[in-house]
Length: 105
Image 1: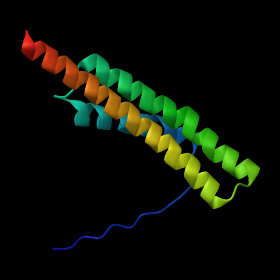
Image 2 (image 1 turned 180 degrees about the vertical axis):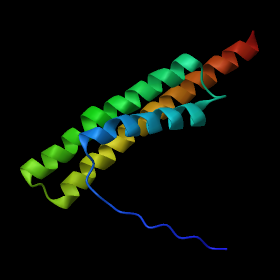
Image 3 (image 1 turned 45 degrees about the horizontal axis):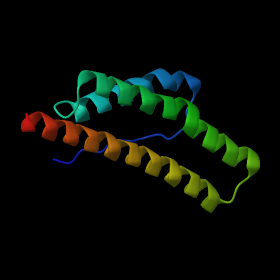
Image 4 (image 1 turned 45 degrees about the vertical axis):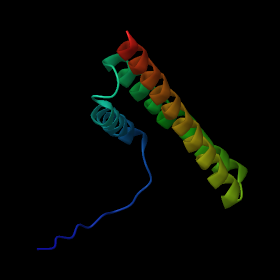
């Protein structure tokens, strides 16, 4: 049986922030459980929310106000995502090194 849903797109509103932050917390916790300590998970969730609430809207605002070409805006978003991915890789490497150290002792 196939089901279809009808989605309506709209601009985000400040009232959406609590829902979005809760979703990020749930995602980070669920995806990180078993791989990182509770403290690492909470730190990453807090940083992800900070990026959502502070950095990304700033990049969007700059694009709208500055009437940037689409490619420049896309480059900024990609650079932001790359920075986030690099940080996640660094956390994973530290965790892997800690695990290897623990196994050695």
